[in-house]
View 1 (spheres, rainbow, N blue to C red):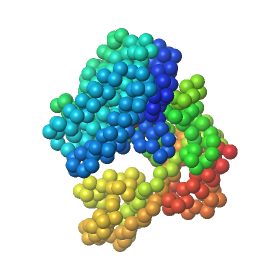
View 2: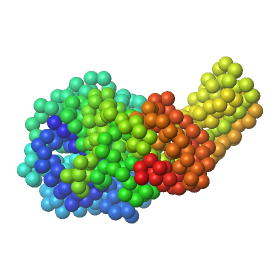
View 3: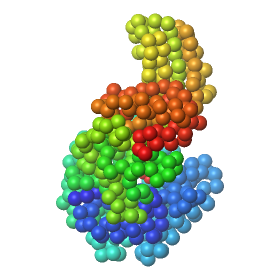
View 4: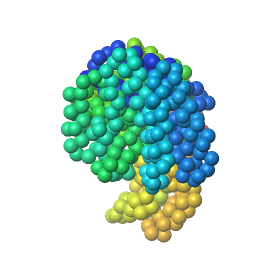
Amino acid sequence: MKVAKFGGSSLADANQFRKVGNIIKDDQKRKFVVVSAPGKRHDQDYKMTDLLIDFAEAFIEKDKYKSYYITILDRFTKIVQELELAETILTEIEDHIQGIMQSDLPDEQMINSFKAVGEDCSAKILSAYLQSLGIKATYMNPKDAGIILENDPTGAHLVQNSYQSIYKLRDHDGVIVIPGFFGYTKEGELTTFSRGGSDITGAIIAAGVQAELYENFTDVDSVFSVNPSIVKNPKEIDVLTYREMRELSYAGFSVFHDEALIPAFQEKIPVCVKNTNNPSADGTMIIAERAPDTTNNNCVVGIASNSGFKSIYVSKFLMNREIGFGRKLFEILEDENISFEHAPSGIDDMSIIVRNSQLPKEKEQFIIDRIYNELHVDTVSINRDLALIMIVGEGMKEAIGTTQTAANALGDAKVNIEMINQGSSEVSMMFGIKSNGVHRAIKSLYRAFFE
Ligand code: ASP
């Protein structure tokens, strides 16, 4: 049995729904289908989820929400009519949205309920469309599928025993279509995953039913070794390990959600990233182990970059001898609810890299003052406009000269290295550079490792 998840671009309009129908028809093993909300049809278009969020916020503020409502319904109407489906689905969709509007849900729950409408309607429409093709298909709400989540703001943690109830779906006759992106708490409250979270639903279902494969359909033939908007036609990746994918997703590869790797990884379900617009292409396999190439030329599988970071630089003479210094420093961050990404350190200094969103400009001085006054340090400063470059590959652990190749490439590109951090697992190497050097750096690193 396979689980096939289709992303927003795969369901952006009626024509895309038809492609999805053909893909499901093509392989009877595709018994579980998980869908996103309709995505953009072209660059200037809106994603359905973005429209729903804008609509929800305007509705709560009682501010001109009608135009969003009309746009949302129009898009579903167009898809349903072009697929020549019974218009009763549209009445159902309208009733569903009206039901949320008339509910007395608290604001956050109301926003979540609106956000989930995109996926929910995609699943209802796709299931009706598959039926029209003669496929025995059933829409199934995530609650009925068994996606019951802990009430935990840090992510998608299934309540214990959920997998057992999901496993029972194997006995279902025909194709089950499940909306992605949301689940329910034990108390029955609808909760959404983070953005792009339909991948997580797919992974949970794949792990739950012990699928032989989790196919993640998107709009590219494979995962590329670098961002194709920086390097034209970069090398495609055939096989990746979960750990490599995790490192690459972390630093900006948006093709597969990093949290979705957890259920797949735990149950060792192989994942294949495939293209709805070219389903015969092999795609990229993500698996538990692969024999890594340890030669300096081939040990790197991908290079990712992500902007939007800053670092807090702290120095104090004899820091290395002061017992508890690190704890006290991190306690300040914990107090202020700031999560950090990396913390490269020297004997007398330390840099703590955080996302910009964790440390807005107006909070900087307050944090500086706290560190200065409470830890009696020599200097504290903020280094802004940082980007992280992650060079990723399991083979790096045993390859000689990778850092040298990377550093030379950055030198050739006239990019100053602000920070280097090699993960303890040696699956990745991180370089902190100024954001304005990212394109130059990636191009040069690509040349060095892939050409
Ligand atoms: N529709 C949601 C989003 O745009 C979830 C998803 O597409 O996976 O983030």
